[in-house]
Figure 1 (cartoon, rainbow, N blue to C red):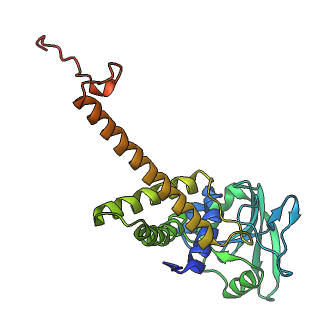
Figure 2: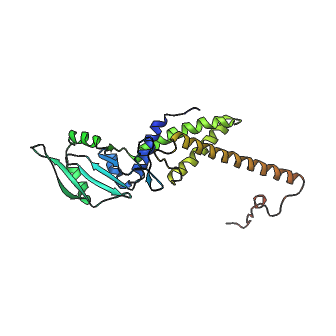
Figure 3: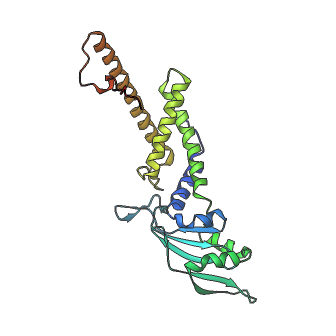
Length: 252
């Protein structure tokens, strides 16, 4: 079966979108290119850590995350359920090349970051080795996801053999809209280590398209029955869709 897109890139974008979306309070720091984040919790199934072939998986939906706003004086802190904690720790290098720390109120972060200089390159290496990744804007990951999911919708729509190209495009667009709604309402969530992204999305898209096709069929059958009843003079009196709206003749 065709993959339609690079599912490894789609998987990475989906993971990062879930992480970024969960902490909207840090969006301005994502936009500035200074936010680094680390997911901490592991994927669990029925209260136990998921292990496949001796491998565990990091959960993008875990409520606790570690963050670093990288500047000349990097600030480390955590968020819980999307809320930044009261204190972080500020690390800074002195002439002896040692790193010290001191507490800083999260509310003081803005002025500290604005007055800081360029980040220390060595800190970036330490962050990367420790599992931190730099974050982009939430919409960036969302757009990457939608581009790939749209390609999947377009590809799968060809399997339904629509009469016209317009019908095929409409089917793909309606399915994409339904998938988007499932994503933002958390009815469709990617969990590392469980169903592969391609299988999860393919199944979802097929179900959406079958639902759309059944709805179209029911609408056609309803219209055909209505026309047949009209020809036979058997229009239902309770059918509100056939009533002519009352228009007042009084001048306004």
